[in-house]
Amino acid sequence: MPRIVRPTAYGTPDVLAVTEAPTPHADLDGVVVEVRAAGVNPIDWKLYSGAFHAVDDDQKDAAGIAASMPSLGLECAGVVTEAGSEVTGVRIGDEVIVYPVTAAYADYVTAPATSILVKPAGLGWAEAGSLMLTGTTAVHALHAAGVAAGDTVLVHGGAGGVGLMGVQLAAAAGATVIATAAERNHALLRELGATPVVYGQGLADRVRAAAPQGVSAAVDFAGTDEALDVSLELVADRSRIASITGSPRRAEAGIKLLGYGPGQDAGAEIRGAARGELVDRAGSGALRVVVDATFPLIEAAKAHEVGIAGHGPGKLVLIP
Ligand SMILES: NC(=O)c1ccc[n+]([C@@H]2O[C@H](COP(=O)([O-])OP(=O)(O)OC[C@H]3O[C@@H](n4cnc5c(N)ncnc54)[C@H](OP(=O)(O)O)[C@@H]3O)[C@@H](O)[C@H]2O)c1
Image 1 (cartoon, protein in one colour):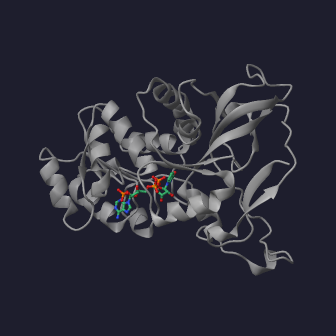
Image 2: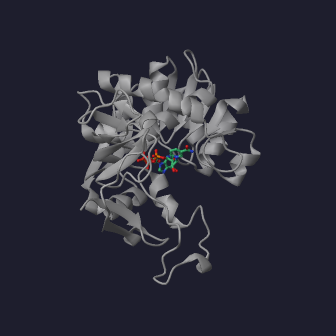
Image 3: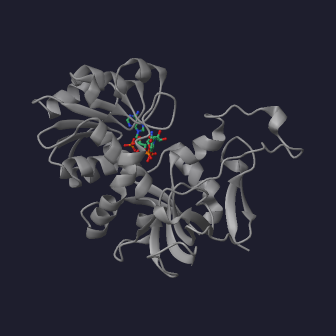
Protein backbone atom coordinates (compact mmCIF):
# COMPACT_ATOMS: atom_id res chain seq x y z
CA MET A 1 0.00 0.00 0.00
CA PRO A 2 1.40 3.46 -0.88
CA ARG A 3 2.58 5.63 1.99
CA ILE A 4 1.96 9.27 2.87
CA VAL A 5 3.47 11.38 5.65
CA ARG A 6 1.06 13.57 7.59
CA PRO A 7 1.09 15.49 10.85
CA THR A 8 -1.31 13.92 13.32
CA ALA A 9 -1.50 17.06 15.45
CA TYR A 10 0.04 20.50 15.65
CA GLY A 11 3.46 20.44 17.25
CA THR A 12 7.08 19.43 16.69
CA PRO A 13 8.32 16.89 14.09
CA ASP A 14 7.46 13.93 16.33
CA VAL A 15 3.80 14.46 15.34
CA LEU A 16 4.60 13.28 11.80
CA ALA A 17 3.31 9.80 10.99
CA VAL A 18 3.76 7.55 7.98
CA THR A 19 0.39 6.09 7.08
CA GLU A 20 -0.93 3.94 4.25
CA ALA A 21 -3.28 5.39 1.68
CA PRO A 22 -4.92 3.91 -1.42
CA THR A 23 -3.19 4.65 -4.75
CA PRO A 24 -4.85 7.85 -5.99
CA HIS A 25 -6.50 8.20 -9.40
CA ALA A 26 -6.16 11.06 -11.84
CA ASP A 27 -8.84 13.67 -12.50
CA LEU A 28 -9.87 14.06 -16.15
CA ASP A 29 -7.40 16.94 -16.53
CA GLY A 30 -4.81 15.61 -14.13
CA VAL A 31 -2.09 13.05 -13.62
CA VAL A 32 -0.80 10.64 -11.00
CA VAL A 33 2.95 10.75 -10.41
CA GLU A 34 5.04 8.20 -8.55
CA VAL A 35 7.25 10.43 -6.41
CA ARG A 36 11.02 9.94 -6.70
CA ALA A 37 12.04 13.01 -4.70
CA ALA A 38 10.16 15.63 -2.68
CA GLY A 39 11.76 18.89 -1.62
CA VAL A 40 11.63 19.82 2.07
CA ASN A 41 10.96 23.48 2.83
CA PRO A 42 10.61 25.48 6.07
CA ILE A 43 6.94 26.07 5.22
CA ASP A 44 6.42 22.32 5.72
CA TRP A 45 7.17 22.39 9.45
CA LYS A 46 5.66 25.84 9.91
CA LEU A 47 2.34 24.47 8.59
CA TYR A 48 1.89 22.08 11.50
CA SER A 49 3.82 24.07 14.10
CA GLY A 50 0.77 26.15 14.91
CA ALA A 51 2.61 29.28 13.72
CA PHE A 52 -0.02 30.01 11.09
CA HIS A 53 -3.18 28.58 12.62
CA ALA A 54 -4.42 28.67 16.16
CA VAL A 55 -5.64 25.20 17.03
CA ASP A 56 -9.23 25.26 18.18
CA ASP A 57 -9.82 22.48 20.69
CA ASP A 58 -13.42 22.14 19.51
CA GLN A 59 -12.17 21.09 16.10
CA LYS A 60 -10.18 18.12 17.34
CA ASP A 61 -11.58 14.64 16.96
CA ALA A 62 -11.76 12.05 19.72
CA ALA A 63 -8.14 11.06 19.13
CA GLY A 64 -7.05 14.66 19.61
CA ILE A 65 -6.28 15.20 15.95
CA ALA A 66 -7.28 18.59 14.59
CA ALA A 67 -10.00 18.27 11.97
CA SER A 68 -8.07 19.61 9.04
CA MET A 69 -4.37 18.93 9.44
CA PRO A 70 -2.32 20.32 6.56
CA SER A 71 -0.88 18.00 3.95
CA LEU A 72 2.87 18.32 3.44
CA GLY A 73 5.14 18.52 0.42
CA LEU A 74 4.78 21.43 -2.00
CA GLU A 75 7.16 20.24 -4.74
CA CYS A 76 8.40 16.97 -6.18
CA ALA A 77 9.67 15.07 -9.19
CA GLY A 78 8.70 11.60 -10.34
CA VAL A 79 7.28 9.34 -13.03
CA VAL A 80 3.79 9.67 -14.53
CA THR A 81 1.74 6.52 -13.81
CA GLU A 82 -1.71 7.68 -14.92
CA ALA A 83 -3.11 10.54 -17.01
CA GLY A 84 -6.72 11.74 -17.23
CA SER A 85 -8.59 11.41 -20.50
CA GLU A 86 -8.44 15.14 -21.19
CA VAL A 87 -4.67 15.32 -20.76
CA THR A 88 -2.61 15.68 -23.91
CA GLY A 89 1.15 15.55 -24.41
CA VAL A 90 1.85 13.53 -21.26
CA ARG A 91 2.55 9.80 -21.38
CA ILE A 92 2.80 7.08 -18.77
CA GLY A 93 6.47 6.76 -17.88
CA ASP A 94 7.35 10.42 -18.50
CA GLU A 95 9.85 11.79 -15.99
CA VAL A 96 8.46 15.06 -14.69
CA ILE A 97 8.80 17.88 -12.20
CA VAL A 98 5.54 18.66 -10.40
CA TYR A 99 4.92 22.19 -9.15
CA PRO A 100 2.73 23.47 -7.71
CA VAL A 101 1.47 20.40 -5.87
CA THR A 102 0.29 19.45 -2.40
CA ALA A 103 0.83 16.29 -0.34
CA ALA A 104 4.08 15.32 -2.09
CA TYR A 105 5.44 13.62 1.05
CA ALA A 106 4.09 10.39 -0.39
CA ASP A 107 4.70 7.54 -2.79
CA TYR A 108 2.13 8.99 -5.23
CA VAL A 109 0.67 12.45 -5.84
CA THR A 110 -2.12 13.76 -8.01
CA ALA A 111 -1.77 17.08 -9.77
CA PRO A 112 -3.38 19.02 -12.58
CA ALA A 113 -1.52 18.51 -15.87
CA THR A 114 -0.67 22.23 -15.78
CA SER A 115 1.69 21.49 -12.85
CA ILE A 116 3.81 19.11 -14.93
CA LEU A 117 7.15 20.05 -16.51
CA VAL A 118 9.46 17.66 -18.32
CA LYS A 119 12.44 16.72 -16.13
CA PRO A 120 15.70 17.28 -18.00
CA ALA A 121 17.42 13.90 -18.42
CA GLY A 122 20.67 15.18 -16.92
CA LEU A 123 19.08 16.55 -13.76
CA GLY A 124 19.13 14.18 -10.77
CA TRP A 125 15.91 13.26 -8.97
CA ALA A 126 16.83 15.07 -5.74
CA GLU A 127 17.73 18.23 -7.65
CA ALA A 128 14.60 18.07 -9.82
CA GLY A 129 12.37 17.55 -6.80
CA SER A 130 13.76 20.53 -4.92
CA LEU A 131 14.32 23.13 -7.63
CA MET A 132 10.96 24.82 -7.89
CA LEU A 133 9.79 26.30 -4.61
CA THR A 134 13.06 28.08 -3.87
CA GLY A 135 13.71 28.89 -7.53
CA THR A 136 10.37 30.54 -8.17
CA THR A 137 10.59 32.42 -4.86
CA ALA A 138 14.02 33.78 -5.75
CA VAL A 139 12.85 34.86 -9.21
CA HIS A 140 9.91 36.66 -7.62
CA ALA A 141 12.08 38.43 -5.04
CA LEU A 142 14.67 39.59 -7.60
CA HIS A 143 11.89 40.81 -9.87
CA ALA A 144 10.16 42.67 -7.02
CA ALA A 145 13.43 44.38 -6.08
CA GLY A 146 14.02 45.22 -9.75
CA VAL A 147 17.43 43.52 -9.83
CA ALA A 148 19.14 43.85 -13.23
CA ALA A 149 22.56 44.21 -14.83
CA GLY A 150 24.60 46.93 -13.19
CA ASP A 151 22.91 46.61 -9.78
CA THR A 152 24.69 45.72 -6.59
CA VAL A 153 22.29 43.50 -4.65
CA LEU A 154 22.56 42.40 -1.04
CA VAL A 155 21.22 38.85 -0.54
CA HIS A 156 20.46 38.05 3.10
CA GLY A 157 20.60 34.32 3.84
CA GLY A 158 22.62 33.61 0.68
CA ALA A 159 23.45 30.00 1.56
CA GLY A 160 19.87 28.90 2.21
CA GLY A 161 17.69 27.12 -0.31
CA VAL A 162 16.20 30.35 -1.63
CA GLY A 163 19.47 32.23 -1.16
CA LEU A 164 21.54 29.95 -3.38
CA MET A 165 18.98 30.37 -6.13
CA GLY A 166 18.86 34.13 -5.64
CA VAL A 167 22.64 34.47 -5.70
CA GLN A 168 23.00 32.53 -8.95
CA LEU A 169 20.08 34.19 -10.71
CA ALA A 170 21.19 37.69 -9.72
CA ALA A 171 24.75 36.99 -10.87
CA ALA A 172 23.43 35.55 -14.15
CA ALA A 173 21.40 38.74 -14.65
CA GLY A 174 24.62 40.76 -14.47
CA ALA A 175 24.27 42.12 -10.94
CA THR A 176 27.12 42.34 -8.43
CA VAL A 177 26.06 40.09 -5.55
CA ILE A 178 26.96 40.51 -1.87
CA ALA A 179 25.57 37.57 0.14
CA THR A 180 25.37 37.05 3.89
CA ALA A 181 26.19 33.59 5.25
CA ALA A 182 28.06 31.72 7.94
CA GLU A 183 31.78 31.55 7.22
CA ARG A 184 31.63 27.82 6.39
CA ASN A 185 29.49 28.63 3.33
CA HIS A 186 31.68 31.36 1.88
CA ALA A 187 33.70 29.22 -0.52
CA LEU A 188 30.49 27.92 -2.13
CA LEU A 189 29.06 31.42 -2.47
CA ARG A 190 32.26 32.65 -4.13
CA GLU A 191 32.04 29.72 -6.54
CA LEU A 192 28.49 30.78 -7.43
CA GLY A 193 29.49 34.36 -8.17
CA ALA A 194 28.88 36.24 -4.91
CA THR A 195 31.06 38.15 -2.48
CA PRO A 196 30.20 36.58 0.88
CA VAL A 197 30.04 38.48 4.18
CA VAL A 198 29.34 37.11 7.65
CA TYR A 199 26.03 38.24 9.18
CA GLY A 200 25.92 39.58 12.77
CA GLN A 201 27.25 42.67 14.56
CA GLY A 202 28.90 45.11 12.13
CA LEU A 203 27.18 43.71 9.00
CA ALA A 204 26.48 47.13 7.45
CA ASP A 205 30.17 48.09 7.61
CA ARG A 206 31.27 44.77 6.11
CA VAL A 207 28.82 45.24 3.24
CA ARG A 208 30.06 48.80 2.68
CA ALA A 209 33.63 47.49 2.53
CA ALA A 210 32.63 44.76 0.07
CA ALA A 211 30.61 47.18 -2.06
CA PRO A 212 32.17 50.65 -1.92
CA GLN A 213 30.05 51.58 -4.96
CA GLY A 214 26.93 51.24 -2.78
CA VAL A 215 24.03 48.77 -2.66
CA SER A 216 21.11 49.46 -4.98
CA ALA A 217 18.75 46.62 -3.93
CA ALA A 218 18.33 43.98 -1.22
CA VAL A 219 16.47 40.69 -0.98
CA ASP A 220 15.81 39.33 2.48
CA PHE A 221 15.70 35.54 2.71
CA ALA A 222 16.80 35.49 6.36
CA GLY A 223 13.94 37.24 8.14
CA THR A 224 16.04 38.72 10.94
CA ASP A 225 15.73 42.25 12.35
CA GLU A 226 19.34 42.73 11.28
CA ALA A 227 18.51 41.91 7.64
CA LEU A 228 15.75 44.51 7.69
CA ASP A 229 17.80 47.18 9.48
CA VAL A 230 20.87 46.79 7.27
CA SER A 231 18.74 46.81 4.12
CA LEU A 232 17.03 50.02 5.21
CA GLU A 233 20.39 51.57 6.09
CA LEU A 234 22.11 50.72 2.81
CA VAL A 235 19.41 50.83 0.14
CA ALA A 236 18.10 54.32 -0.57
CA ASP A 237 14.92 53.26 -2.37
CA ARG A 238 12.66 51.15 -0.14
CA SER A 239 10.74 49.81 -3.12
CA ARG A 240 13.97 47.99 -4.03
CA ILE A 241 13.98 45.96 -0.81
CA ALA A 242 12.01 42.71 -0.95
CA SER A 243 11.46 40.26 1.90
CA ILE A 244 10.02 36.76 1.76
CA THR A 245 9.46 36.67 5.51
CA GLY A 246 6.71 38.63 7.20
CA SER A 247 6.94 40.58 10.44
CA PRO A 248 5.11 43.63 11.78
CA ARG A 249 8.28 45.73 11.43
CA ARG A 250 8.61 44.73 7.78
CA ALA A 251 4.98 45.58 7.13
CA GLU A 252 5.55 49.10 8.50
CA ALA A 253 8.83 49.68 6.64
CA GLY A 254 7.36 50.29 3.18
CA ILE A 255 9.32 47.46 1.56
CA LYS A 256 8.00 44.74 -0.77
CA LEU A 257 6.51 41.81 1.16
CA LEU A 258 6.28 38.57 -0.78
CA GLY A 259 4.39 35.46 0.21
CA TYR A 260 0.98 34.20 1.18
CA GLY A 261 0.17 36.14 4.35
CA PRO A 262 -1.91 39.28 4.76
CA GLY A 263 -0.43 42.24 2.87
CA GLN A 264 2.02 40.02 0.98
CA ASP A 265 2.24 39.59 -2.79
CA ALA A 266 1.97 35.91 -3.72
CA GLY A 267 3.27 36.61 -7.22
CA ALA A 268 1.38 33.66 -8.69
CA GLU A 269 1.83 34.85 -12.25
CA ILE A 270 5.56 35.55 -12.13
CA ARG A 271 6.31 32.41 -10.12
CA GLY A 272 4.28 30.28 -12.52
CA ALA A 273 5.94 31.82 -15.55
CA ALA A 274 9.42 31.30 -14.06
CA ARG A 275 9.13 27.50 -13.96
CA GLY A 276 10.13 26.79 -17.55
CA GLU A 277 13.21 28.97 -17.41
CA LEU A 278 14.30 27.42 -14.13
CA VAL A 279 14.01 23.93 -15.62
CA ASP A 280 16.01 25.00 -18.68
CA ARG A 281 18.74 26.60 -16.58
CA ALA A 282 18.99 23.65 -14.20
CA GLY A 283 18.93 21.20 -17.10
CA SER A 284 21.78 22.96 -18.88
CA GLY A 285 23.84 23.21 -15.71
CA ALA A 286 23.69 27.01 -15.71
CA LEU A 287 21.78 26.87 -12.41
CA ARG A 288 23.03 24.54 -9.70
CA VAL A 289 20.57 22.94 -7.31
CA VAL A 290 22.65 22.32 -4.21
CA VAL A 291 21.37 19.33 -2.23
CA ASP A 292 22.53 19.29 1.38
CA ALA A 293 21.08 15.90 2.38
CA THR A 294 18.53 13.29 1.38
CA PHE A 295 16.36 11.21 3.72
CA PRO A 296 14.10 8.22 3.11
CA LEU A 297 10.41 9.21 3.16
CA ILE A 298 9.92 7.46 6.49
CA GLU A 299 12.53 9.78 8.02
CA ALA A 300 10.58 12.96 7.26
CA ALA A 301 10.54 13.85 10.96
CA LYS A 302 14.33 13.61 11.09
CA ALA A 303 14.61 15.82 7.98
CA HIS A 304 12.44 18.41 9.71
CA GLU A 305 14.52 18.24 12.89
CA VAL A 306 17.64 18.89 10.81
CA GLY A 307 15.91 21.73 8.97
CA ILE A 308 14.74 23.38 12.17
CA ALA A 309 18.14 23.02 13.86
CA GLY A 310 19.91 24.69 10.92
CA HIS A 311 21.64 22.72 8.20
CA GLY A 312 24.36 22.89 5.58
CA PRO A 313 23.88 24.91 2.41
CA GLY A 314 21.18 23.83 -0.01
CA LYS A 315 18.16 21.58 0.03
CA LEU A 316 16.91 18.77 2.21
CA VAL A 317 15.08 16.18 0.11
CA LEU A 318 12.89 13.14 0.84
CA ILE A 319 13.36 10.05 -1.32
CA PRO A 320 10.39 7.62 -1.17
N1 LIG B 1 7.36 34.06 1.19
C1 LIG B 1 7.64 33.03 0.43
O1 LIG B 1 7.08 32.86 -0.66
C2 LIG B 1 8.69 32.05 0.90
C3 LIG B 1 9.10 31.02 0.03
C4 LIG B 1 10.15 30.19 0.44
C5 LIG B 1 10.72 30.35 1.72
N2 LIG B 1 10.24 31.31 2.54
C6 LIG B 1 10.85 31.53 3.87
O2 LIG B 1 12.16 32.05 3.66
C7 LIG B 1 13.04 31.59 4.67
C8 LIG B 1 14.25 30.91 4.04
O3 LIG B 1 13.85 29.74 3.37
P1 LIG B 1 14.93 28.68 2.85
O4 LIG B 1 14.22 27.59 2.18
O5 LIG B 1 16.00 29.39 2.11
O6 LIG B 1 15.52 28.15 4.25
P2 LIG B 1 16.90 27.43 4.56
O7 LIG B 1 17.36 26.63 3.40
O8 LIG B 1 16.72 26.77 5.87
O9 LIG B 1 17.95 28.61 4.70
C9 LIG B 1 17.93 29.53 5.75
C10 LIG B 1 19.30 30.18 5.76
O10 LIG B 1 19.29 31.26 6.70
C11 LIG B 1 20.62 31.49 7.06
N3 LIG B 1 20.67 32.13 8.36
C12 LIG B 1 20.51 31.58 9.59
N4 LIG B 1 20.61 32.53 10.53
C13 LIG B 1 20.84 33.70 9.87
C14 LIG B 1 21.04 35.03 10.29
N5 LIG B 1 21.02 35.36 11.59
N6 LIG B 1 21.25 35.98 9.35
C15 LIG B 1 21.26 35.68 8.03
N7 LIG B 1 21.08 34.42 7.56
C16 LIG B 1 20.87 33.46 8.49
C17 LIG B 1 21.29 30.15 7.08
O11 LIG B 1 22.55 30.32 6.46
P3 LIG B 1 23.93 29.93 7.14
O12 LIG B 1 24.00 28.41 7.09
O13 LIG B 1 24.92 30.59 6.27
O14 LIG B 1 23.90 30.44 8.56
C18 LIG B 1 20.38 29.25 6.25
O15 LIG B 1 21.08 28.70 5.16
C19 LIG B 1 12.20 30.66 5.56
O16 LIG B 1 11.71 31.43 6.65
C20 LIG B 1 11.04 30.26 4.67
O17 LIG B 1 9.90 29.86 5.39
C21 LIG B 1 9.25 32.17 2.16
